[in-house]
Image (cartoon, rainbow, N blue to C red; front, side):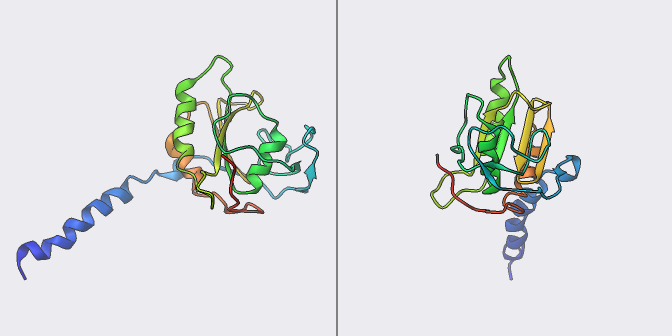
Length: 175
């Protein structure tokens, strides 16, 4: 066998090894895991008494409607996006009263990396939330990561858990 032929498998393997080394070190990020909620019943969509008592909520009672999976520029009712979490959708929130286009751009970029539904729509949304205690909150059912910076690696680490504990995982989302 020629030296070139023997080297070919190593040559092909090198790009794969390079890709795996670019994976984020998720142990660096404190992704919170909440206990199971007491109830997941549906409330009227005008209700504000939803969630599991956390800020931001990651499970619990919620509205029967869901939000469209896109970037929202007005603050939606939390009870609505909680239903998105139940379906395994990712919710990326931001709190920037003065505006933060770079942060929103980062959230939108990582949103595109979420799982895709059967209808071809990315199963994640971005929305403002003036009640979160930090500038950024990334949520899945019973999981959250919060920070004052939109760290793309931390957001990707959270997305590794998409659908893991959602009661109705994998459901499509409207664009």
